[in-house]
Amino acid sequence: MSARLKKIAVGLGAGVALVLAIMVIRAVGVSSYQVDVDPIATIDFDQAGATERLAAALRIPTISSRQLELFDKAPFEQYLNGLEAQFPAVYGALTAERIAGHSLLLHWPGRDPAAAPILFMAHLDMVPVEPGTEADWTYAPFAGTVADGFFWGRGALDIKSGVLALHEAVQILLQQGYQPQRSIWLAFGHDEEIGGGSGNQSVAAVLEQRGQHFAAVIDEGGFVLDGLIPEISPRPTALIDIAEKAYCTIQLTIRGEGGHSSMPPPHTTVGRISSAIQRLEANPFPTELCDPVRLQLQHLAPEMPFLPRLVLSNLWLTAPLVKAQLAANERANALVRTTTAATMISGGVQENVVPQQAGATVNFRLLPGTTPEQVLKHVRRVIDDPAIELTLGMTTYPPASSSVDSPYYRAIARSVREIYPDCVVLPTLLFGATDSRHYAKLADQVYRFHGLRLPLDDVAGFHGTNERVGVQSYLECIRIMVRMMQNLDAAD
Ligand SMILES: [Zn+2]
Image 1 (cartoon, helix red, strand yellow):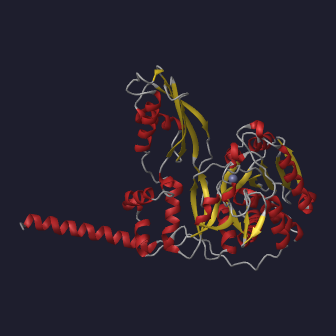
Image 2 (cartoon, protein in one colour):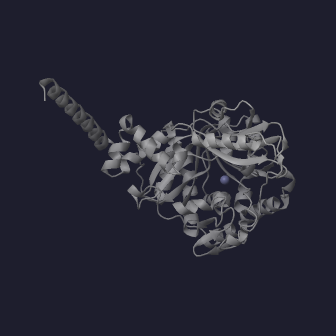
Image 3 (tube, helix red, strand yellow):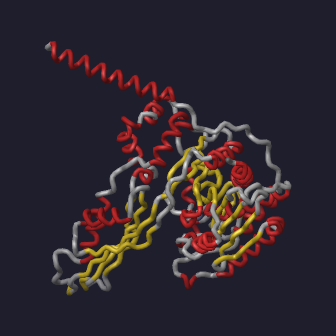
């Protein structure tokens, strides 16, 4: 080897050693972001009563449907009247207002009128059970069965458990003689599953008109998950959603010459729509580590064994590797990119007729920072077919990411660790959309976390078959809610 090559080799070796040294120093130097807490003595309450109240709520089919003429208001009346009857202390002490027909706003006035209030949210409606799948359920979806240690039924996870746990928490605090310093508000929309355009949007408009502002809004979203991150097992992960993806739908339509299928053009309208979808699937959005996900990895790093900690505490170098690993995982892929899902397709009236028109609906979930206009541009470029018309459909504009350095984030983290002391609390990005977006203008911080604990596999019950919640998990969720109300009340 020539002297010059030797010099380069030595230089390269020294460079690699330096990079490794920096990586190790950073990995060793990271300290935990977990809030230190003393586990609290158990919070006593009527557990049998709480169990029966949730079971009763699960027997009421408060289904919202996109076909508005199918909306049946009777179950909503039954549910709202039932809550009033089940929680006399709550409805005795708080003011209750019905808004937009079947949405509910509760107000628990604080001792200090100058203290910024907190708003807790959930929704009263649920998605239907897909016709034809009823028999696949272990227990009937609207029977409110409590068996094998679980509540079974549509709405158990999403989100009658949240509505009831919030009521239970207020009732427990009232029975303890607790008086909040800040006002505590609770908002329950009746049409979250179809966009919340009537329910929580109306509640937010009423509050805005009255000049109401909140220090923090707490909506549904994150859970305490077992088995999410094998490297830290058996510790559960509590996910506090500090941001949510925006939602946008684009309709693709093509109009062309119809005719007899015995003399077809080389590509029919159906063929061209199909090829557009195929191109969209073959050209996903690029991967990206957005701020909420970076924060998640940063908070996770100190809890990990040495090697993954080395990777996660050196994102300046390892980001491409981390993005590729997350993208390779079906679930985690949605954390690192704007996703594309072709959900509906139409076209054709008869087998021997070339259709004059065909269409498809594609639903996108946008990373923070990506706009619907950028999505349209991406679609236009990728499908590369000027004959296909693009129409922007339903679009949401969620609030900006909330802070992990706020006393309100820490109050939520504290509450969950008081009940599950070994859990790892992580900020993250919610893939779905929540009603909390209607409050973006009314709140400094928006977090999505209710505190139910479940094994990763049970997440499939969301809008699916065998939706269920562990009885113990629900009772602990009530305790977390009690502590969230107290800790958020005291946060400053
Ligand atoms: Zn929900």
